[in-house]
Amino acid sequence: MTVRVRLAPSPTGTLHLGTARTALFNWLYAKKEGGKFLLRIEDTDKERSKQEYVQNIFEGLNWLGISWDEDPVIQSRNINQHKNAIQKLLDKGLAYRCYATETELEEMRMSQKNQGQAPRYDNRHRNLSKKEESTFIEQERDSVIRFIINDDELIKWNDLIRGPMVWRGKDLGGDMVISRRAISNVIGDPLYNLVVVIDDSGMEITHVIRGEDHLANTAKQILLYKALELDIPKFAHTPLILNPEGKKLSKRDGVTSISDFKELGYTSQAMANYMTLLGWSPPDGIEERFEINTIFNLFGFERVNKAGAKFDWDKLNWLNAQVIHEMSPELLLESLIPLYKEKGWQIPNQKWAIELIKLISPSMTLLKDGIEQSQPFFEEPQIAEDGANQLKLEDANLFLKHLIPELEKINAIDFNNEKASYLINNLSKNLNIKKGIAMKTLRACLLGTLKGPDLITTWVLLSNIGKDRSRFRRFI
Ligand code: GLU
Image (cartoon, rainbow, N blue to C red):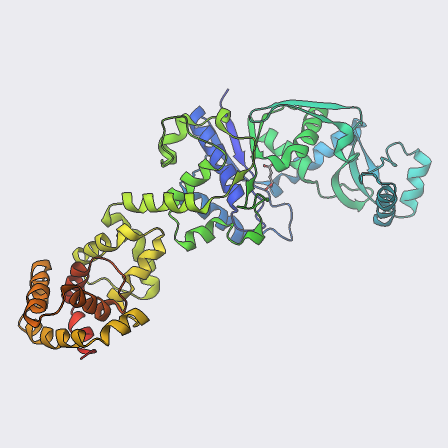
């Protein structure tokens, strides 16, 4: 048997962290088993589905390094198969039309609530007589189609993550609606649980791996597989992703889309790595920093937690910093160039840019930190309070006054670390100024603040592009 798994996103929003993590687990499992990972776009909600979200989902998966096999299946194109299945259930007497109006259903729910019961459909139209049915049709009532769920039915499966599962028919809310309301001689739009069963079966899916919020759906879908005499796939329900407070991660938590993380400066490698750790842990002795392309052989459901996975920003940041520090300066530069372009910054030449990257990368956690740290090399820096205070010192002024004529003797292109160190040491000694004061003064002029990367290299790089002298002259 070839393993066939799928991701079935609804294109009603951008690629969500939870969906991307589901994609990853499916992909890892398919890779490990030498199987296929498929995509199905669940676009049956015509109003909320948008092509731009389909694009965002494809782009997000590509960015994470998750590739899929075969052309994506577009759910709305299978509507005939979905309707045929509903007709089959009607013909077999396993489904029926329910003519209850919205108002009647609301009254039913209210009365259940008043009696302290959980709301459920009371199966009132399960056994309508021919006469009752024709009265409703004469009244031109619309109808939904409901699939019969017997209260005493026991639904069992062996979940690959959660172990043996048992659901009772009576906990599934009564006979289930499988098609939207429509006039009574047509089949209205087929609904989620029905269409998923038909599509998963049509795509020959062997393992359905999805979030634990689908547990009740799985119970309902198993009943549909049986009623339609289809092979039932295996199921694995992954733990939910929780926010740091332990609640289900939602839009209210701010950043939840993969594109948001990308925008914040996270690398695709760190994201893919981190998401794999959201619910799965590597075997002992395997480090938490890994590439998904090398770890998939170790992936398995036995190491997936049942409990919810708390989102941990510190760990994600740590992984991102690791990824950045592992990158060659050339690769890191390549990742930063598009961000430089957005800012309108042009690198003077490759060699200089590589030296800049080497200078700033050790203190980078996010890619966008590279932008912040590169800024004084492309734009005039703002003078921060600590820089301004430093430049008010008498010794600072004295040092700068003597520095400028010395610099005029040196060709900016030839300026290097040795010459810079020599100037600092020599001038501060001759002027009887503390070397620390000299260095802080240089830093304040060049970067506007006393914080920043290695001073000598910073100076040399700025000098090489002709930006140091003017910054010194501003303060004398
Ligand atoms: N479209 C559903 C969702 O995004 C698919 C669930 C499933 O995997 O069956 O939640």
